[in-house]
Length: 330
Image (cartoon, rainbow, N blue to C red; front, side):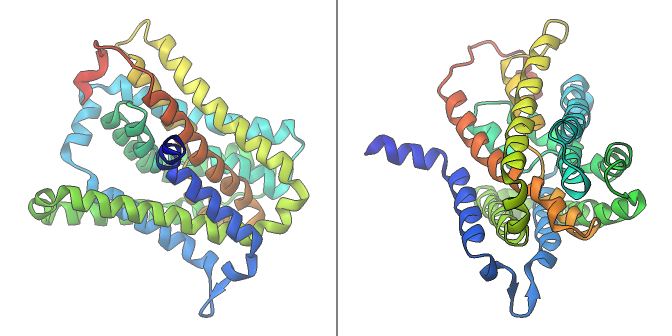
């Protein structure tokens, strides 16, 4: 019984994500409209709230770490915007997907790393400072990288308005992150004085926001899931797995030439494999105007958070060793 309770505790977030998806899938009408407001319209504000929370965690040290160990951050960010978009496009072509579903596969591979990756990195005994910095960098670059990648790779499936997507991402990402940064700047002392409470509240807000996006995006894409559910699930599992594997083993290979260690390999694997599915879902509904395009991101988010929890649980029980080349990053 104790082992079961420990398993549930260690994978609580992944289980919560699965529960939200199951509830929304079973009762789609309950998550369509609340008080006359379509829940889909609240997805972007939910992501903005998460981005605002991320902004309040940013410090000068996060940016100084980039200058101190640029190869560490560059490894993850380059793989983030190289491997995942190409794999998403490749899987769409391999599975014969077309139109909005294919564009959705590319979209989920073209966004920034997921905010949940920082929690997973901590649980996996990875390099948390590197994880936070990589997430911040990929998030700040995403308003420019994502539209470009979508135009190049998803333009063959649907018409992509790169400019509209960039404007939308600036509103969803950079504005709330900047607002959060200003709050941190003006209220840094009281925030540091209550750091544990602030961190706990921000984590809960982030997790609640992710759960809400799952509920809001699952309901309208239920019919599409019945049509191509098996292929989309398989594509999501492969996409996520290839991200983990490529991030880990490419970093290990680069470790022969650069000061990258096991902790860094775990961190890059998590950052590359875990995408900001909520952001992809928000762009699918706001810019592509398609619930079908949001389906790959939604399925990916559900699987990613579950697999990330399982991976973190496994790595947390696997010792890394006493000598850590990447300790200077923290």
